[in-house]
Length: 239
Ligand code: ATP
Image 1: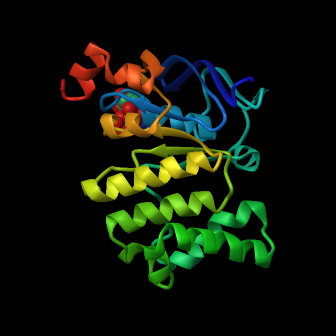
Image 2: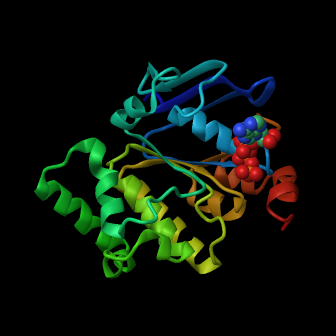
């Protein structure tokens, strides 16, 4: 089986400064891969580039074998790529419901399909059902992350990319969001997860990649990375 996503020698620069330097990895359908690494390692830049928000200086991004490295965001959304950015980027002055409906826009669902997508969302996060008419900018941090994740799922993605979903959230909420990401995988979704919370990320992942200074320094099955002395010392608190 060929990989759903194959990144080959990807380079992304801000002017003269190269933030991603020759990154290569693959992600199989139905897998969760984590990208872990220190601040400024290039994780956000990598995801932004995979979504089409930043053009690569060179390299290939194969999605189902087709090179999308030069494709625009809308084309990638159509193909089933979707990014939940670190800042969540919700429409603050709109309701929870309207944010969700906007998430489905790219698929142009019929009203019964839209109903079904909303029912699935509310079953997944009952909190969002209770707050469907509330403005997004009045939600708590955890509720915002639930909404950002749900809005992305309304576009029926095949590959969901999440930038720091646990950022600023209480540990209990992090557990429930990551558990939900684990469930999505069993429903066939593939996930690329960027996380500072390396241990929690590796627990829900099939494999992981450590990125430092724009390059991947370690890759492997998650349990292998969790047992790697160097990775443990640097990213897992050495336990
Ligand atoms: P963090 O975990 O802190 O979010 P990160 O691994 O996501 O870090 P990036 O945000 O991708 O790292 O940043 C990688 C490098 O690119 C950093 O050195 C950063 O300063 C630089 N960088 C990021 N955005 C820009 C920009 N718009 N212009 C210039 N340099 C940038």
